[in-house]
Length: 253
Image (tube, rainbow, N blue to C red; front, top):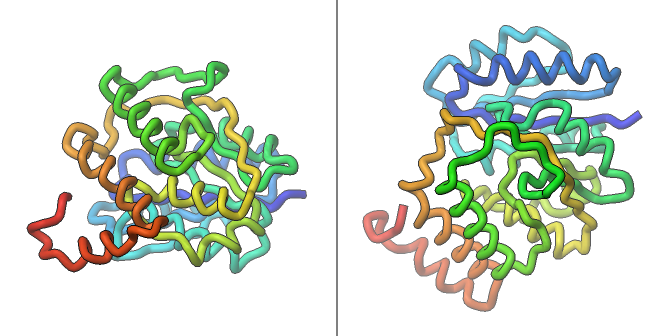
């Protein structure tokens, strides 16, 4: 039987994570799956931890950090999972944009792949609540730049539902950074460097109107983050080292 760790990064998710945990725990218990859910709280200032602690089941584990960032939280969840005996380790967003049956599809389809990721843009995906036109344009534009810069084959690098085999994560976790916007790209880029087989599959997904990500405000930061990441993985990485030494007011946020 597969042993699965599901990491849920959570930053101020008191209004949404309760339903997510209820649905995921109930669904996977019915599947008689050997699973663990690791909620990684990062820089929470609300009652997320109180909501999570209400779910008193042996399959749930909580990590609580003062430091923030989705990438940081996922990496810490990976490290915790690797201390156990899970052979499949993945992550999913706390807002339940990806329902549990869609994450289970990742488990069923991993097969001989090293990883499998959800693809919202696949023609066979079921998107019950679509993104706004603006968010779709930005998302596709971002993906186009990512594919051009990193030569990645994936149509959707940013969907928050991914699953990997333990052996691949053991190789790439020490190399990962925790950039908020480019973490997924960094993860998939290192997987490609390891010649890992990562498949994209159709998914079930719903846009969440109360998303904490302000696309309009962060467009420039999003695109600069992947450009900076590409520089890190090139002979021009000295540019990034110079940038990091600049005063905070001179950087783009």
